[in-house]
Amino acid sequence: NAGVTQTPKFQVLKTGQSMTLQCAQDMNHEYMSWYRQDPGMGLRLIHYSVGAGITDQGEVPNGYNVSRSTTEDFPLRLLSAAPSQTSVYFCASSYNQGRPQHFGDGTRLSIL
Amino acid sequence: LAKTTQPISMDSYEGQEVNITCSHNNIATNDYITWYQQFPSQGPRFIIQGYKTKVTNEVASLFIPADRKSSTLSLPRVSLSDTAVYYCLVGDPASGSARQLTFGSGTQLTVLP
Image (cartoon, rainbow over all chains, first blue to last red; front, top):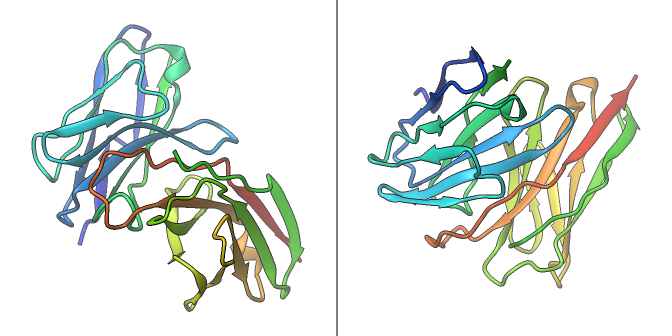
């Protein structure tokens, strides 16, 4: 039972590069979300999805895109990386938005 | 948007009971309250969830007063390994609507020997 799998675990980018952070879950959860966590701070919601084909913005969506073509996958795209996007990114899933969320191990992203 | 407020930090000693309170003044009728624990370099982990009165599991208890505008996570007899950040979150388990679900800043609990 893999739960929530995030890849890669670490990534270094140059300013202006684009990349996709992958998130997959094998629990058939409808609700998935992406958070970023900066040093010493709590989690801030970037984007979320209540089901395949449905996405919406969270607190800090600028500079990020998401799509939800399947129930299992919820990739996060950085369009043009900026140093301000250096952070740890967590993906989470749950049966629906009110049920306990299962988190991945995070992706540590550094942008130079 | 159900916003939560928690103390930034708390210290305790091994073997003591720790109570962390979360304020959620605009909680909606169907919202449940969920608490998470986060260790450094890990994703948050579910601890307990409840709607009203008291919920207890093998790890913690959750106390919710009648007005539901706050909740208290109680950790019995803490150990050094309970040092972590604790977050409370409110949301509707039965809702499929696209309402934001946000974490607050959390409470850093430090357990001292």
